[in-house]
Image (tube, rainbow, N blue to C red):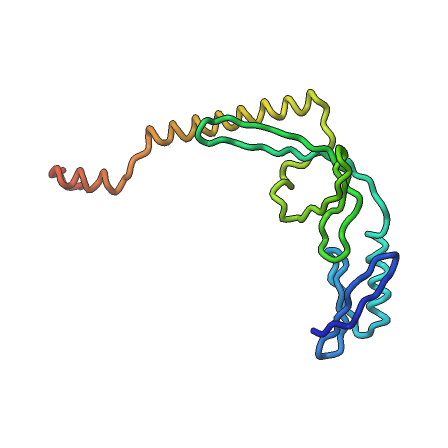
Amino acid sequence: MYDAGTVTKNGVEIYVKVDTFGSWHAQVGDDKLSAKTKDELVKQIERSTKKIAQEVSVPFVSVDIRENYNTGDVSFSAKNGTATGVHSGNGNVLGRWNKDGVAFQRSSYDSHQDKTFRPLTQAEYDHYKDLYRASVEASHAVGEWEKAHKINLKAEVLATLEKGAAPAE
């Protein structure tokens, strides 16, 4: 693929490429576009950028959880933010943190995705923390039970054979 410049539609600048067969290509957010002519691609870019050129305001809370595996302690911190759009080139969510106004991009590969919620009341946040702590305690209890009851089956069979066990019928 060869760089073929940029196209700006709806206030969004998009990089355009052309391949050795003369087909035109671009990516707008998660949309991979291709066309036989540049004019066709520009029309597709215009349609796709309309989706991302609009400003949005989606409030959320991101909860960061730290677990100390040695002590079993769990700590929580919550940050409120507002998502404002999707980056046209890489598809990341764009937004700002409410407390300090700092802008951010959040990748879909971000490890915090599973700890991002709609805005929570204090009671909901406290309940979530209680549930999470209970799940950690339960997980540790299951691990201890498994450790206490687990056997190495092959080692047990070999040990029994060495003791001269009767052959199986």
